[in-house]
Amino acid sequence: MSRTTAAADPSLPDAWEELVTTALLGTDRRTPAGTVPGRRAPLALLDAAALATVRRRAGLRPAPAAERPRPAPEDRRPALPAAAARRLTLLLADRSGTSGGGRRGTAPDLMELLPQWLAVANARGFAAPPESLPALLDAARGRTDLRPAALRFAGPRALWLARLNPDWRFALRSTPGGGTSVPGPHDTDGIGQLWQEGLFAERVALLAALRSRAPAAARELLATTWATERAEDRLMFLDSLRTGLGPHDEPFLEQALADRSRNVRATAAELLSSLPGSALAERMAVRAGSCVAVDHTRDIPTIAVEAPHACDAGMERDGVVAKAPAGRGERSWWLGQLVEAAPLDCWPRRLGGRTPQEIVALPVADDWQGELHAAWCRAAVRQRNASWSRALLGEPSAPEAGGPGAVSLAERAKLLGTLEAGERAEWVAGFIETHGLSEAFQLLGVCAVPWAAPVGRAVVDALNIARDAGSYPWSFSGVMGLAERCLDPSESGRLDALLAIPDEPEDASPGAGGYWSEAFQRLVTTLRLRAAMLAELTPPGP
Image (cartoon, one colour):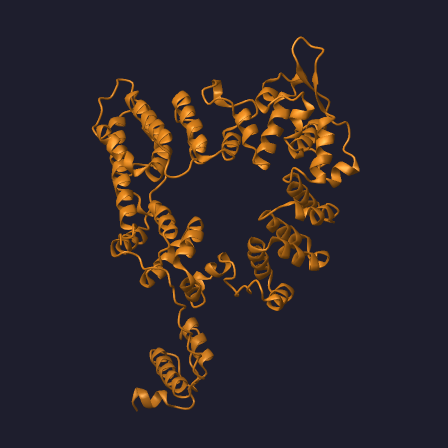
């Protein structure tokens, strides 16, 4: 009898699960039914599995054909120039990146240039080549910082693809209306239905889209269900009011000050304090003004501070957190919150008509200067007040360059963010010229890209000085990487003289000269590559 005939024996099992279990356990431990233990048991199991496979395939009923996917939407934006399309393929193919330590050689890091390439392509309104969309979505999947620009460039076809591949579902969550189409501004029935029946993410997207085009309508829609929303949802919805925040939002936010959730109350108070003319801002001005005054009895005018002795119910309702963090005194904690929320315009009236610079220059009695100036810093950032930011930053060439109230680089960076790009660049350049690069990394991060000429010159000069001084080169790798992405490409010509390996001082780090030459070579190569990228993305003239 042949093996096939033996396998057809009806005494052998054909239940698929039984065969799988026997195969997993092994025929030494579990012999197939109708088969004696021994050398033929494995062959009998395989014959039975082959027969069962044929039966399963032959008996499979065809399923109804799935609905054919709808064609991808058309992208009406102009196509990329051919050279730019080839460049995009190269940028997306370079997925290796570089390690945080060690030497990188002279080759540019292409993946670090992709965000800049996407920004220019989006600014010039090009559409992504269809064949590049899978690689573009894969890159955005691995780097969340790429997603906004990558999805904007990919356009409507990215969402079409994301619905077909689970790996790209992030695009549906990251794009407003990605999971569902947001009704048009005149579709009141559609807006109401989606707000009442949609998933939370869909409702957030709807509110954000509506807020950007019709702030009052978005606020009124939120008010219809505010009382029945969960606390965590109310917090997210309330945060959407930052877009287009204005005086008309004040009545709604005042009601939110009585919310059951402390986080909702705090957010409402923060938004109201960002409106200098709001009733809450005026209440905070009165409270803060009662704590701060000019003492004229001293030899020179001095700011005297009398911090609150208690946090009453009215203060708590207006967003003041009563319990101080560990290590903070209660009175200084309350004072800081009052001053931070008070309109900065109230202080010249309160302090003798002085300008912000004159107020900041006044001495403060009893060691309250740090607390008071730090609160003014937070207020300047919250209220986007450039005059107060200038006063608090001080001159970039001052010792420590910390300014009267900026006690950390992070706070200085926030204050700089309230200034115009040109003024910001001049201040950072002055800081670098006086203090070098070791303290400037965070400050460089707030400068507009590409860096303005003063910043670029200051960075290159400081790197050159550090190289000539034999400084430890690896400590400047972060600034060098930032320069590769942010220096104006036209600066490459100024760097040619820095490509040679310099003579190393006796006290220099071993191999430092070679590292500096290598780093400057990579910088020049990257700048020239960026210049080529910009040229490729420039549409041809008429």
